[in-house]
Every structure is written in C-alpha cells, then in structure tokens.
Image (cartoon, rainbow, N blue to C red):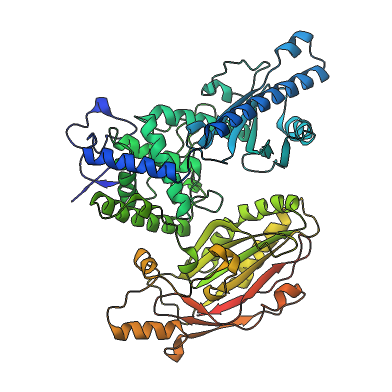
Length: 600
C-alpha cells in the first residue's frame, strides 16, 4: 500500500538521498535526481517551442515597459508631493514626500509575454488615502493625460484597482497607504511591520508583491521555475483553465503549483518539471492544501487560512496557500465543476507527457487547444451589451466577475446532477451595432446519474442571478443589457469558431482526448448511439421543456423563446431541439424573464 504524504499526494516514501538538509518547503523532495541527456534535449526543444510560439517579448517592448513604469513612478511621486503641499505640511515634508511603484504578477516573475498587462502597486504615506486621493485625485490626473486610455477605476473590487493603458501598455494599479509619514526609497515590501495599523483591503493590495518575493526565495532554481511556469501558463490558456474570475486558476495560483513541484524535484530541468507537474497533480488528493512553507501564526490579528478554526475554509475544494503572512487560500474561487474540468485536463496533460517521454509525441501536441465547442451538446450563452466600448468595459467586468456565482447557484439548485463547464474565453459579435461580448458554459448530465423523472428548474436560478446583478451594480447606464440563452451545439453562433466556420461533427481525435462521449465497441452500439444523438431511440428518453411566458422580452430574444425538446442520449448528454430559450435583462433597472424548466 502506498504511503500518504503530509500534502495529500499519493507517493512512495521519500528516497534515502532526500535528507533534511536538502528539504525545500514543508516535506522532503520526492526525488533529487538530475537530468539525463534525454531530459536536457527535451528541455532545449521545449524552450525552442516557447520562443517560436511567440511567448517572449522583444527588447524594444521590454524597454518600453521600463520607460512606462518609470513615468508612472514619477507621476505618483508628484501626486503625493502635491497632496502634501495642499494639506499644509512643511516645505521639508513636501520635499521628502514620496511614493513607490512595485511590480508583481507575471511581470515581476519574468514570465510575461508580448502585450501582457503589468501588475503594479503604489505604496504611499499614511495621510494619502485610497478612497479620495487615489480613486479621485490621481484618477483625474491620469484622465487628463493623453498617454492614458481606457481608464477604469474598480474601487469595490476584492482588491481595489485602477485599470488603464499608458502609451499602449496595460496597467493594473493598486494602492497601499502604509503607517509611515515618509516612504523611504529602500522600502522592504516583505517587512511584516508594514502591516501594522492598516485595513484588510490594504493587506490584500500588499500581498501580491509580498507573495511573489517569497515564491522567488522558496524555489530551488529560479530560472528553471520561470521557464516551467511560462510553459504551464501557456498550456492552461490553450486548454481553457486559466481564469481566477471564472473559477479556474489565475497567475499566482499557477505560480504556486509550479513552485511546489520545483521544491519536490529540486534538481530537475524544465522538461522534467512539466512532466512531474502533471504526474503530481493528477494524484493530488484535494482538498489537501498545496503549501510552499508552513503557515505563519496569527501575528497582527489578520485571519489566516485554517480549516480547523474557520468553517468557511473547510468548504474550499482546491486550496493553494500563499506563502507570505497572512497566508490565505489563493484559489477560493474554484468550484466542484471547475475542479473536475482541471483534473480532466491534468490527466490529459499527463498522458501527453508520458508519450513525449517515450518519444511518441512532440511538445506541440501538449499545447493543442481545447475544442470546447465540440465537447458538449448544450451550452448557456451569456451576451453582454452596452452603448459603447467604455460602458461595455465596466459592465462586462462586473457581469464576468459574477458568472462563477451562476455556476454555483445552478449546482446548488439542481443537486449537482448536471455538470457545468464555464469557458474563460470572451467572444465578440462584430456584426452588432452596439458594443458586445459573450461567454459560454457547457453542460451535461453528471456521469452515472439516472435523471428519469427529475425536474430541473433553471428559471428561478437564473432570475435570482439576474436580480443579484442588478441589485449590486451601482453604475448602471441605459443600454447596459445582458442575455442568458440556452443554445445547442449545432446552433452556436459562427463568431465562436475560427474564421466563422463550424465543424460538421466531432473529430475522432477529440473523442479520444475527452470523456464526454461513451465508447462504442461494436457496430450495433455505434448505430444505437448515432440514433440517440439524432433524437431517435426509445420514447421514454424524450424529455420536454415547459417554457415560461415571455413577458416583455426584447424583439431580438422573442424569436428564440419557443418550445424546445430535449433528448437524453446514451452518452449522458442533453440534446436540445431546434430552438433556444433565453433569460433576458433589458437594462440594469428593468428586468424581463424567459427561461425553461428541464423535466427529466
């Protein structure tokens, strides 16, 4: 019987060479083995692939980023000096007044690509606050600069942020007011004393920089870590599992997962680390947490992740703990549905890496895009519209941030008998006269569940979701609308496909990659499956949907709101009939509702 490590990974006991002196993190390494010639060759091939995939920025873009950061640094220094003078401080205080810009995220880790945003933190003195000075005074200064475009303050976010482009470079700017009258140029952002007498939003703002610094200190080889992380970030985006907002994993989550694998294999090179990444996390026994170091005890009164004391921490499905105090679960957005999707993708990646190790596949195979729109027969389509691009940017950000709640609510109300797969990619219908954005979720029957006679009432769930969107959004404008529609695979809009075309049927390769289809081992079984997919088969498998009255839905939606037939196929998927059903918000102050009940 295999031994169970302290981290929940099913593994053999640590090898004899994994002595205490070589330990990284909270447990012994799994292996101290270094690379073979084959591993070195595969690493060179991987690095070549990453370069050819265009994942590295040019020297010119790197220089421009440095120039932009220097400009922003000077802007915030001048801003603080201006406020210091306006508030009547002495000339010496005005001269000493200072603010600093720190970077974190992919830029600080050195794994950003061309066009990537720069996560930045402005640290200012105690008398310069976030609410008025940052989101009003500095916002107005930036708004008057011709280099600044797409300026979007998000003061009510979990981590308050100001988003904008400066000379074409995307910037996410946070602010932290620390308990210092003068911010020194050599400020140590990792010093825990910075956390004295500050509020929790400020702690969260500081955590990004503090966590990145700790990650870089806790990995055995920074260069190998960065190459591996760059690779896994690219893989996650290609496979549709890169998005903290939707409920998958974001930048810091992937960095922590990769860093832990680097600790477990301290002498491995990137090709080995990529392979070990999938091997480790296909075996990981969630919700056992991933940690780079022991969790520091409560020093200053801030809460830390501790499921023994905090009941809400026990509900987390995929804990990935940040290393800097206060240690928190960075992946609290992960749901049962998104964890299932990620585990399927880990298994797929592990299989490809095994083939690469056997010289039966190349790295390009690992990064083949996930064919989301060939993987399900039923989808929810969420259309978000506004009068212009500026309105859409704010409205879309709010709705997108709530889509995870829609998934959780449907899971809750339908006893998790349907499996949902939110997709993090955004799509745009360029034929619309208004500004438009769309997101999609695939869904299917939970494998092994018998649903005969069970009714799924999506109407109430969607109405509740819509109402929460309207009630909580305080910046609504005329023309801000969103629609939730049920659409079958064969009627997906053309703009979600490359070059606007639709594949006529699922490819054989896809069927082998994913478990959404049931294998047919004989011609008779294949014939029966095809018959059911087309809507044939036994009468008791025919399911009906009872549509609600349309009310005052918009004309664009009324033509979709007709009766619909659903067929349960042998594959466990739900096959809709010829029409879609929609749930509509005509604007953020007036609601209409059209959806359906699934009678199963």
